[in-house]
Image 1 (cartoon, helix red, strand yellow):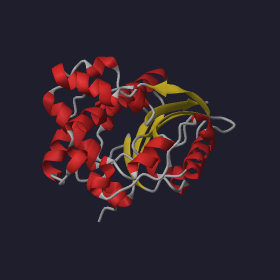
Image 2 (spheres, one colour):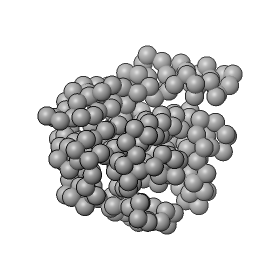
Image 3 (spheres, rainbow, N blue to C red):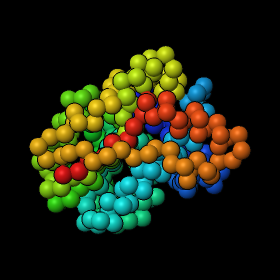
Length: 261
């Protein structure tokens, strides 16, 4: 039985399936397949096409970042925390040493209905609030850590602990993480699609430096809604999306931070 926080995975899954069917932003046949079989009942804003476009762009931007880092260090271990039913393992074509998809045990149980492990792909049922599972990861010099759609359900301490555990496990760590700002957390109490599945955000920050440690330093922000992707929309949809989801106010709510050592 999935907890409400876990059920939020259906929101980005729906978004990726929708844009993939439309042939824009992101190609994700696996998302189309899984969404067709899961048929989870989304309602309200969680089923908004605008949010779907946003979810598709977020995934595509992070895909591009991961691909670039793996091209630079193809021997890297990839750890995707809060993977849900995401198929980034299939979308990213760049080689890696081994790829780990990590989420709560009840999520991994569903995930195993759609994905199969092999010598280069593993699934771990574990909580991002803890770090004991990091010991199970393959030891390597380079690692790529993806935290997508998960930081808002954690705490500052939990994220810092995870960064620390990764920096102790691997020689070099490259991290991408999307975050709510403090304003977004306040607003989410009243108006947020995740409330439609019974979940609520608990943490947000616009201060990227709070997660740094002796090894890991902030590198920069990624644009979550690049013009090139917005231009794949047309007419009113493009104009409306650009104003509401890519304007100055939207950028005060949601960010993608990157870190390296």
